[in-house]
Structures are given as structure tokens and as C-alpha cells.
Image (cartoon, rainbow, N blue to C red; front, side, top):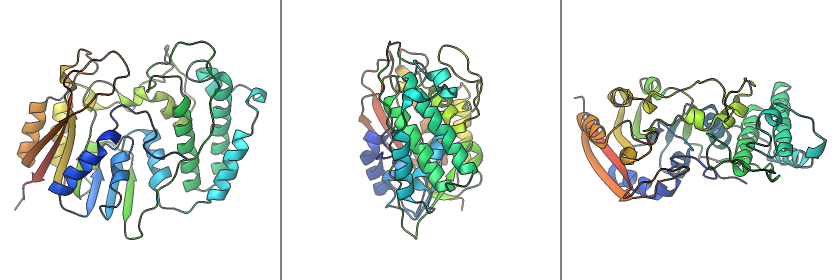
Length: 340
């Protein structure tokens, strides 16, 4: 079964989670935790025993489904889900007809027969939820499981900006379930898929954890295949990478990023603000260069309150040609000034 960290995801904080958690526990106080740009969700998952109330947010449709699959505290029948998985895996892929996934992504991102089965499962899940054969929690678990199963075997270097040009892609797809999390009855978790700058104006928290994108790489484009299969609107696709028309584009990946970040921090209602940052501003790749500099982060946070800075060496995830020497990861922890 898949754990929430079993994904290939640019910028994942999985390998830094011990360090981040220790810094937060030693420098922050409170009972509520807001993961503003949650990405994989691994930070919230790792801190589930530390607080009473959680808010988790990301603007990707696929990430929202994954959070609901893992974290939404609603009833589900695991025996029924296991039986469905067994039935799906027993299907003879060779006998399946073509579908949206195989026509567009077969022999590119996936083996063609694997793509046929992926499309078959996705269509069947949509049918079952519409016919009330599965409840919403079961649907989220099954769809999140499909996304994890896809990501495990995709013919990519870790994201979906392009597929690897190879012949005779091996058939490796196997549908496996995620392992949902159970939280205590005295805990709550709210799940959102919203523009962070809008959401922060409506919520209040003790600790806000902020790990936004800092370069021009748009996550909605990096993970367009997963987004497409999640939404299941079957749009027309364009270009070599087979992407839909642009949507869900982040201002944090544009030159306006410093202004947008300052607006976010100014509108946060939190006692502590924790911001992660890495020094890709020295990257040779223009797409990897930071849109917000280290000094801009410092200045914006210092206006919010007393800020401590922690850093450590860290090997940067590299799915392309980016070379970063002496790369460091930073954590800023700001104790917010009292309005009184």
C-alpha cells in the first residue's frame, strides 16, 4: 500500500521533514497548523500527532483528491476497496479497447496496454460514484490510489513536462491502494483547493507553514497528466508533451512573486509563520531561478515579526540539466508581532 510520501514530486520536503518538525516544535507554540502550499502533504502527515486542528491547502486538483483520500475522516469499506482492486488487476489489458488515456498517452507516458487499463479504471470509478456504488471517501481513496499507481510506473524523469523517448515501454502497471490516515477524535482537518492568498484572509491559525513555488516552473503544467486524469474532462491536448490549454497558473512562478508573497504574509492571521526556501536563485537554468530572493524573503518576514533563520546543506532534486553547487535549504520562523 502507498504512503503519502511515495511520490516523485519536485520540491517535496520528505527528506527534510525531521529537520522541519524539530525546528517548529522548538520554536513555535499552539494547537493549530496550516499547511498553506501543501504539495505532497508530507509535512502535515508527519505532524499529525502534534496539534489538534489542521488546515491543508493546494491549488492542484490531484493533490486535493490525494489529501481527501488520506486525511478525510469519513467511513469507508476497506474490504470492498480491496475486492475492487483485485477485480481491476485481473482484467486482461490486451482485450481492452482504446480510450482517452491510451489514445493520448499510450506509447508515450505509459505502455499502451497499461494506458488502456488506466483509462478503464478511471471511467469505472466515475461511473460507480455517479451510481452511488461507492461513497465519496471510497471514491477519493480509489482515485488517489490510481494516481499513485500511475506515478510509480510513468515513463518520465519524475514529472510530466515530457516523456522519455524510448521504444517498447515495459508494461508495469499494477493498481495498488493508498493507506488512509486515522486521526484522533479530538482532532480536526480541513482540506482546501484554493488560491492561498485568498484563503489566508478567511482562516486563523497558530502556525502557518509556507512552502510556495519560487521559480517559473508551473506545477499545473509539470503534473498535467495527473491533473487531466483527476478532473476527467477529457480536453483536447497540444504539443509534444500533450498538455491541455493553460489553467491554474501560479503568480508565484512569475515576476510578480515578491509582491504576491508580501500580500500573503500581510494577510496571514497566525502567531508563527514558518517559511521554507532554497537558494536556486544561482541556477544556470532560467526556469529554475528563484522569482523571490533571499533578501526579499527576509525583509518581508522581518516586517511581520521577529524572524529566526536556519539553514543546512541539501542536495537539490534535479530532473533535468540544472546544476547547483553549495545548495542550501532555509527555514525562516517568524514570531508575529502582537497587534496590541
